Image 1 (cartoon, one colour):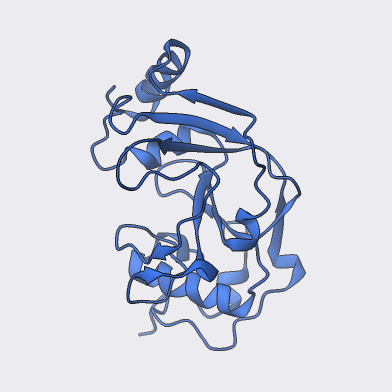
Image 2 (cartoon, one colour; image 1 turned 30 degrees about the vertical axis):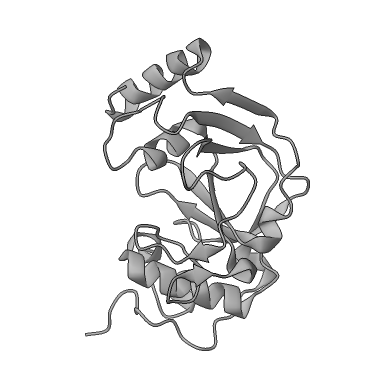
Length: 206
């Protein structure tokens, strides 16, 4: 029986213009500003792949690979919250001094659409369940996608929690502005009020 999503992608992946979606809307991130892994909000992570991350385009073993840098963002703040605090399901506004960031790309991003509306996975020998496959499988596909289309800005994918995520490759990272539309500490009263509303909606604690 053939797996719905082969762990090894085919060598002849093909991405047509019709498989792309344009994204010029604001993106959301929640970034820690202190600690050993803190980075500027618009800086991609060149080190990888990390085992806990689903769409790492880095080649194993884990090492610095600037040409395969990655940056994860969300299309709405609730999705960013759900993703960042998914392990503990508790929103901690103090650890790492997180900030809520909203930023609009300087141009429309060219993203491979991997949502349920896309037939691209099916035409590549996989299925619509690709975004929900095991993380190792998703990472293998992400690597193969970047190899097949090195000028691609990234991926447009459903979050396994709620909403949509945008996974940016180096080209997409370069399209982020130097300054965000908004950056507010998570422990700011206005931000905490928003986070409390989101927590109640998605079943997290604050």
